[in-house]
Image 1 (cartoon, rainbow, N blue to C red):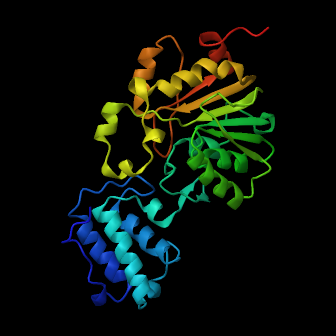
Image 2 (image 1 turned 90 degrees about the horizontal axis):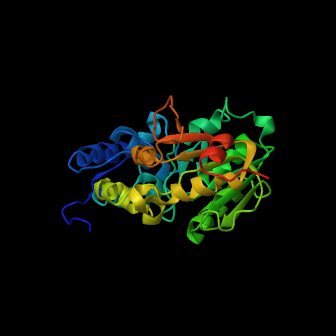
Length: 308
């Protein structure tokens, strides 16, 4: 609910700089969290203001001093109010986010992309895979399609299947698939985990499934409450979907394939649940944690049935 005391007198503002200065001073009064593309209020509001007017993030000074129209002032007022007062993340306000240096459409039907898996995609999952040997890729719990579509761009010779249970999420993924021109390479599949996944062998299976337990959900900043609950929350201390993925992956991985799954803060619970499994917990140069890698041999040994 908007606080009646929070309002901008747009009649007194002339240019972007006026909005920017005021946004920073107002933001200091509210418990805002920055975790959806920026990590500080200066970049956050620069991004919101410039993107709202179709300007580049590094717009030159003269554009920051240019006189705004009444409609532009009204738009900026509304978006600042929603970001500061209602804690709505910037990507939902401007309907865009970046992942693997690619621009994606996002709205409140999908999570805002922020997975450290981006670093693995950009590095072509080296040294575990050779790009030329990757022909089939599966992205489980694709959401808005960011991981699957980025994989399509970075592995142009591979076919990618992108799976999600949510029709709404897949509708957003379709927008992004069309925008990136990947209709022939990336297939969107509605499925509850493995239910409708094609019975074939994948050289790479990636998943960023729901993995937030009930206790952690209650502790999340307000910004995350705007994201779909079903894309964040998972039963069994956040491991419900991860368990399903682990127990069936053996039937879908190629002999030299790998499974990469993000489990975030549920990593400790996962390790405790499967103490004998040699999870390889990956390190990231640009930050991030809670992502494991298992080889097909690992999956076969600890979760699978021996192949005939």
